Length: 238
Image (tube, rainbow, N blue to C red):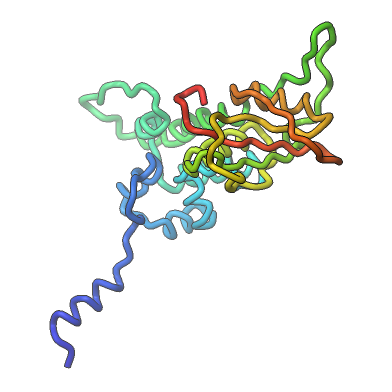
């Protein structure tokens, strides 16, 4: 017969934590407040557990298209039943004082809360995609849409978390993320957009959207493929 200590540890091994250890995102905290696991949230939302983790980690570039990330966000918010007040808190918007008497129909504002959260998320996806190749004395060139441009986002400083944040920004602008990985070294002093010959226009557009410089990339043929090599984080502007 197993000792009491053995039975106790065997029972504890069957209990799975709701969330791995570490700093939780606002979405993860909302889920944990409802005592839901990633798997249960995914089942309620009709998305995969992996997609739930992408949303909670801010890795929206993992979705095939920006629209897929937007739909997954809507399903996630609906599964958690976010009301207007909580959605505003998650979005970082001002929250009015709590009323003394609550309206019994307040739960009907869930849809409104979801729309607020989606509106903030959509702001990232709908950033103006204008801009292009500018030279003195000549008009802007007509550029292909962002989703036709392949972009590799590479870690050039050793900070993979910041690299993923930059990749999410690039994906939110509508570009096709081909790869997120490490650069050839971790000594790049600043973030920049590297471009092969004849791809200055699309490189300048992306660099302007990110607020970083451009640098030529020797060699390369065929369709334009850009490389965003991420340097150290330098504050809100980068």
